[in-house]
Image (cartoon, rainbow, N blue to C red; front, side):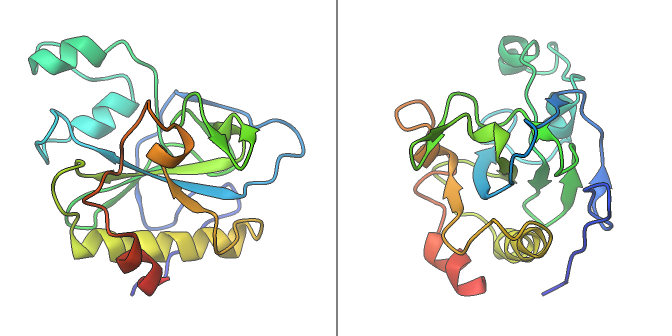
Length: 183
């Protein structure tokens, strides 16, 4: 497994960087203590095409697909995206607050964006994620835990777990036991 490292400004040294405008500062004195795993595909159920980076950087062409016209005005982001082949992209410094979780609660604490890191996996609820994605995700979590020690061994969760009833990702196709075995 390739070891990843994070620089002093909160950026991965080995990711493709696409700086999203969709972020802000975390509240003062907020410890980063949670990793939230998401699943995304644009259009839904389709992979590749570069649409996810365009979406997070407010460049999604509403004419590119009927679904894009519905979402192109949304202002969201994640810290990272892991593509099907394990390709790694970063949109927001880990030190900043990405807009990935929305209305959410973890262990009774609301506003998960304040204290979490959002990692999107290119995928959908119904299709299995790729081994390369699990391997890259495990390496990323390892680097995050080294940089942010408040992220404990039980502080990795799905979007569906912090926003139940509102979100379903990363979905039943995500194999939590496979990720745990790699961590």
